[in-house]
Length: 336
Image (cartoon, rainbow, N blue to C red; front, top):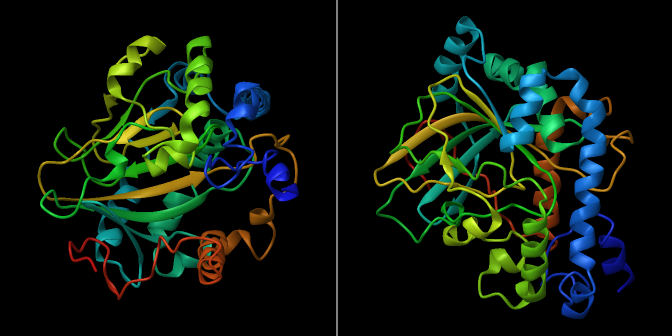
């Protein structure tokens, strides 16, 4: 129980994995509601400093929508090199299957520059880094990957990512630099504009969910990644999810604490992107030590995190979600 209590001061979110977080008695008395409110206040306090590195337009876009879109992000010459280099890269990548979708990825750490120089240069662009720190409300180093999404509508069960949801109760930054045009039928990212804001209606909704989440039939909802029925958006003062249909070389950085989903694709698709993620302690001051930025670690941060998760999986501490697969081209539609 002491460890469960300590977890309340961090990003632990599962209502079934932690008896305190899932306690109806505690949540009736405001435990979850206070965790959410404190995380929100802490995030905006950190952004007050991090926002100095962004333009007013970028800050306003995030405040209004919960995401920032930058078209023609990379210089044309660098983007052309990325598009030539990324599909042809052959690697023993990591893959995760979720229903009809398979996500394949390889790390884009500085140590990977010998094999993927253009992709590593793009992934470590200072402008992308600044946006991710602001949206995620953490002055820390993001994890960057070259990623392929392979969707076959005829295979497997429903992809859980196609259900409108929020990842957790606090700010998280995720970034996608799309290497191809993303059209209406390509399974685009969709986001409910403004759903990252903690309005009075959202506070009430979070409170309602906290009372029953531990007994939810949906395992993702029970683990703290709340699902949102589209028909309920209106009572929160929110509109429908907006499909992010964009041309190649567009960067999208979103706070996936807001409601989002991957739009179902009705045809086979293979889409490539440079992907980043940044999440930290929602209650931190944002000026503490970032171990992933230490010398000797920063240059191989994503690889080390992947290896640590492999080790934890072998000891039963984590599920093994990203196993290594046999070498193949990054744009191959072949999956294990």
